[in-house]
Length: 259
Image (cartoon, rainbow, N blue to C red; front, side, top):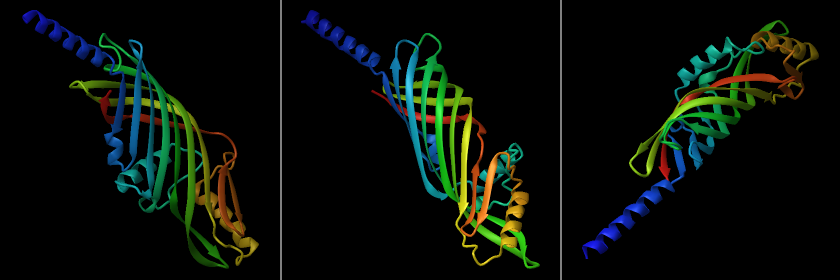
């Protein structure tokens, strides 16, 4: 009887160990993104001793941005780093922004624990699509009378980039993990489109010409990079050459479930 119990106990421990080893997949929720009203999940699968592949995606509906004052400070900081447009006359706290993104990545885990636990180096690609209603204002004049135009701009930004990131994933019990994106950077290209479909047919050509010049002056538009059209249908802006995109990725916290 004791011998049979010992055999059953050994089989149970073996099965449990094997099951733990076979828990090579993790489904995660990004907690820090949730604080920004963005739903982001990631699926990670282990391949080999030190490697894993992951795919992440997220979505945010178009609405006012939380922590709008902090966003305004970030945009003002970024404004000084961009040499083809300025956002000084954008009503940032009134802007409604939505987005979705896709992030494939490959991870290499250091140390003896092996994937998916421990410190890792991630090579990742990232696609972002931002869209929103961004109100701007322009001070100009019409027939000698000062006029402030309030323009709602339908804005779209698309970025594709490649980068590196350091992170660390911790085990929480047998089933859960805590994944910390420590810090990383990514570089790529950005595609810009903005339009404000205002009916300008009631204004003369001189007004539309002056309005175009005023928009270029107000927003410091570099026409080597961005093309601006002002006609009877309104205002449109698009990039006329490739624009560089540089950003940070990190300080993210993810709760995962292993299976």
